[in-house]
Length: 434
Image (cartoon, rainbow, N blue to C red; front, side, top):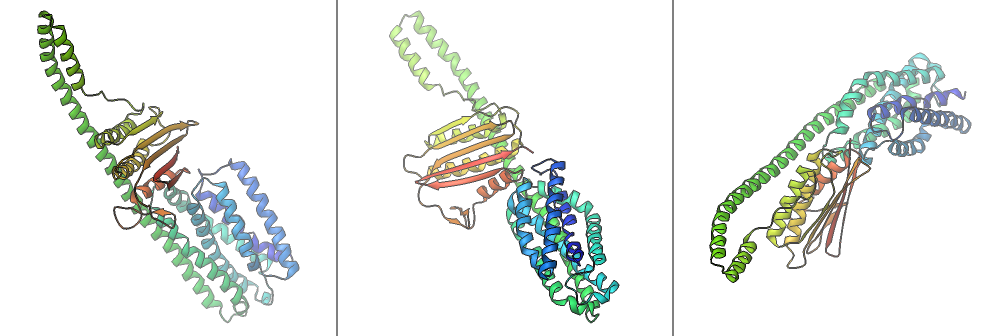
């Protein structure tokens, strides 16, 4: 009957609920709008998909890929997260929910063994399948609302998320193949116990993998945070050293000023106006240029000022257009670490130029929530790019500085883009307030 395939497909509801539960705080639309949209779409998918399977005599496995791919695209479009995080969450939930399918087949075979020739579970078996999905949601409620959400907010390495999706995807495919190939044998009772044991073991291994991934990612994120704090402390140490040098310079200038006034008074008393003019010109040339405040935010001003001074010492023109206010919508440490990495790379690349090198820094606030940063600099030679990742010219592998910039930019739904060509490298970074 037509209810059989429809009841099998309603497992999509607890799966969708779990996906959006884990990403609460990153939705692009309001909760009520999201609920109406998701419920309407899933209801249509279940009814139309179930009707199509019943009419064509297909098992619901035939709709697996046609439903999975648009559902993943829709989920990514509704949350403000990098695609690799959204896809990982989506496949992780699919892996957990697919384990319910195997156990539901076992339950349906035990309760309704006469259903063996059917392509689908009985309507009651489908409802049991649906109920088991919500039981899994209840069991995973705390990890989903605490561990998963915390992991989404941490600034962990990108590569760990890129590798996460592999096992859930393999688990889903293997489970669907098992369900489609062994259903008849399971209902006949010949493989019932073995199938139930295999489903439980695979589910346990999958959940163990999720736990290990969370623990490893948490440690990696903590290490990354420590590295960033060390970078920030190094910047503060350098700024403190520059401040001490400035204070010492001011003391020397005061001491010299007394002598200058004495000499000026003596020349004025002798009315040696020509010598007085020459002396004033010499003194004016010897006074160092005063530091210029680059922006109102002190932390950002300190980082930009430090690299402006280093560029001046290296003879590299440094153009700065910073219009950032004292209070920023994002963490000052994030902005400072991004600037330090980009300016450090720009200074090193421009320093290799025999002539014509320059650094151009822009920074502004957009709509009181976005910090836009652009660093443009010249470089010599060729830049190597592998799989979309620029390779470092200082060590083997990808550039750690640019990877750190990308990780910081993307954690709250921002972005970064690196362009190069014609001897000019441009880094565009958007940091979004949490």
